[in-house]
Image 1 (cartoon, rainbow over the protein chains, first blue to last red):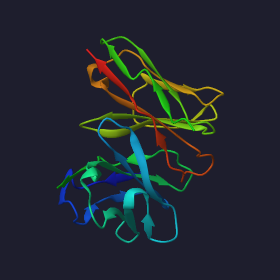
Image 2: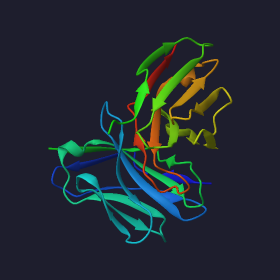
Image 3: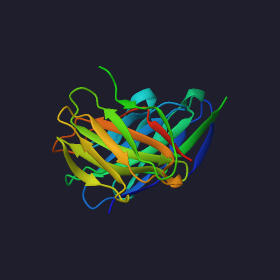
Image 4: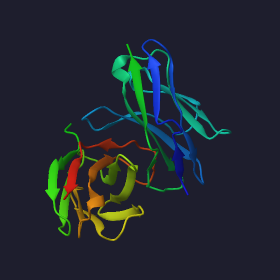
Length: 114
Length: 115
């Protein structure tokens, strides 16, 4: 069965500092991994995804994520946080076996302080 | 291109009633998924439709049902509403056909309140 864990309910960083939002996953086959962001009073927006190939994936708004197969992790990162990055971040997984069920993590709220 | 639209945006119902929510996907997208979002449970997968067929279903009771029309528009229905059904219901569309690596595009959601 697929599962996703986001171990931190909340992450606090100062503006200009690097940020990391953690995600670990479990799937029976090979994973397709996604990050989405939800800003207040707005819908979820796609940030980036890992399908195969390079373990470092670059996405929107300067975000990137590193896929680590041995640790079954897909952590979201940004070198320099902005106050406007404050939002709710979701990690999600699908398997490559044709399963069309996306499992989302519980979400991590990011606060970036000026 | 217009985004995913959901109607209505807000609904207030009483226990025991039923409700129908509507979703219009992005033009050309044939896959539509539904999710329930609550503060305590996060985003829970309800079901996914492609070409009018339900391909996968989450762990929700039979009171939750859905369908997809030939123009890819989708509806979900909740019968015999319970207080615990109060949530934000999100619809997402994608280009996903036989592969499952396409990202999803979400609508703004329908906020359902059950009194």
